[in-house]
Length: 474
Image 1 (cartoon, helix red, strand yellow):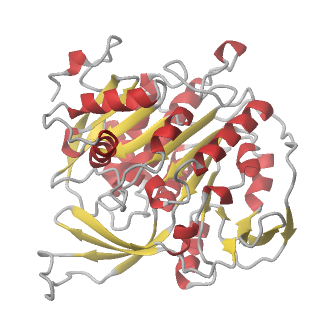
Image 2 (image 1 turned 180 degrees about the horizontal axis):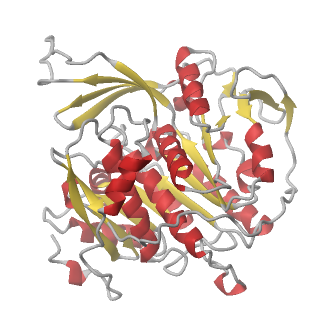
């Protein structure tokens, strides 16, 4: 996703480095866990069904649609952690069947040759993002290492679900499986065809099609005793999150964090993904005031604005100005990160261009999941920047989205320098990831480090008086 691939050679963004060599540092103190006074509506049924310790739970107040499988071991680990931040990744999970097409697509009723056997990998935006983020933490951070927790849906009784669980176990990612009791749907899976530097998908959603924001447990996420980063992966892939359902959950998380941990950072990001319905709505605009970061590619940005305004965008090289205007109107504090393939990427906020990043050239082997790896690198870079400075939270920052009270953020909370560090890590990871078959296969840390060392600062400065001075950038 995120449309890094347009044609070969592949181009990516390069951005500013802190050049400190320090990423996450160990926390000097932590808040004790506080029990939140919400009514418990479930009773645990401790049935260990596999090596992942995914346990069964029956909710007593959920009617016929009861949650079936879930993980509880990660909660105990969180209560004991001294790490700075915890990442909760929520979204879709699929098994991907990859077909690498050597020639042209077959004509109707025809045939084309595959130069390699069809290969099978764990996939889905949330799985890809969590896997790459966990690998970065493993390779580039000292103890205590932050946790990455995956909240998704799968059927543990079919071969696809077992493959996803094996993948999560291998990468030490706890799964909070929110599948509902009685849902016999298969684990989601898709066919990915890679040809000419591009990739296309045909997807059977399975249990993902029944996944709803109502299935998420606000108390478990909100009671995380560290700084919290909640990432929503593949919004348009999950209709059960649309039209206010996810909004209510995010509001509840922010409210809970304000009451429990006013001195802890609460950051929420979202990746749009492609909308197979072609409607590009789903109440996304209503979510913006709750989001710190929204990541998308240029195709997704164009489609969202075109459907919202009922008109085509102006066909010129400065369409990023249109993006800044539209997304800035939705919320002046949310930051939109738009990737533009061979033209690099832009960071937008409040009708302004915060940063424009130059591309570098890479020859892609497998572009699938490049956007998910970029997102993982972006999140890691953000927090590497913040933890490297460990700025104290004070009462004067009340109302900042990423700082206190689960509220809204601004330039003081995540300054442009932090975004540039996130984008530097994003492009470095994505550049290394596209040289490997499989969207959820992390690159070696040494390969990422080589690209990081060659990352350059943004070519264009940040202006405080709007985006007009960037009109001749492209």
